[in-house]
Length: 85
Ligand code: SF4
Image 1 (tube, protein in one colour):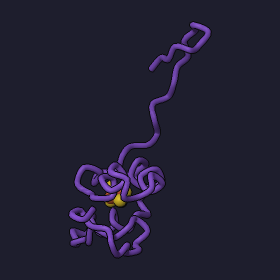
Image 2: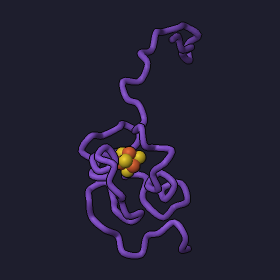
Image 3: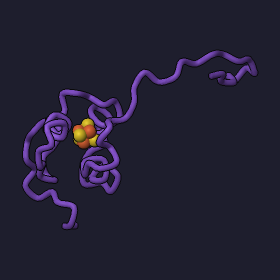
């Protein structure tokens, strides 16, 4: 991939080494971040880089049911649901 720099020259830029988590489109955490219920730090550290230490990711891979309010670090955030304001 080539990017144009401010001085008009071109420089090759490596594709990102990181890819989104495979559960990104099904997991409530990115949606909570998108609507402002959670800090963007969660998606930056876990979802956007497919961080395998995410507890939700690990449980998803075992086919477990995961409560919506379980954070990537495994803690439960009491008032967090898909349906409240
Ligand atoms: S919270 Fe975990 S399982 Fe959900 S999208 Fe982010 S990294 Fe994937």
